[in-house]
Amino acid sequence: MGTALQVVSGIILITASFTVPGSLRWLLERHSERPQRALNELAKICRLPEEDQSVQLEDFDLSAAREYRIEYKCDHTWKEFCPKYTIWTHIAYRMVTMALGQISGVGASMFYRILVFEGLRFSAGNMSLLPNVVAGVLGLA
Image (cartoon, rainbow, N blue to C red; front, top):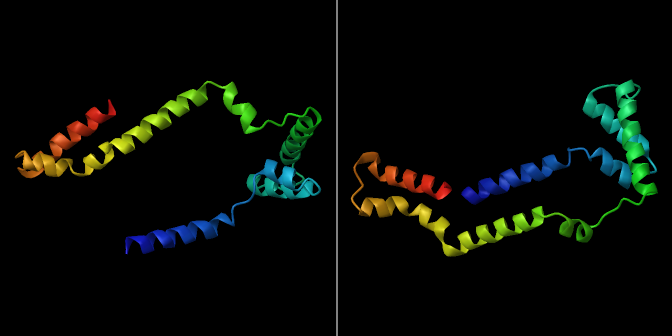
C-alpha cells in the first residue's frame, strides 16, 4: 500500500514538472534564434506586460550577459571548476563521513534503541523514550 502511494505522488510530480517553465538563461542558450520566448516567460514571471520598462531592462541584462560570455569565452567545464575551490575537499570529507556512518550501521541501530532501552527496564510509560532522545541529542553533538 505504501509503495502505491509513493508511485501516485511520483506520477503527480512528473506530470507537474511539464508545467514548470524553463529558466530564462536556459531559454536564451537553447533557443537563441527565438529570444522572444525568454521575454514572454520573463513577462509571465513578473506578471507585467512585455513592454514594461523593468521587463525590457532585465531581458536586456540577460541577453548582454550571454553575449559577454560568448565574446570572452567564459565557458567552464566541471573538470576546470572542481579543483579550483577548496570547498570540494570539505564536501568530499563530509560525503565519506556519511558513507561510513551508513556502512557502520549506526542509522539502523536508531530504529531499535527503544527496544534496547525497554530491555534495560526503561519501560515505564514514556521512560523508554527519554534515553532515546538523550542518545539522539548526543548523536548531534
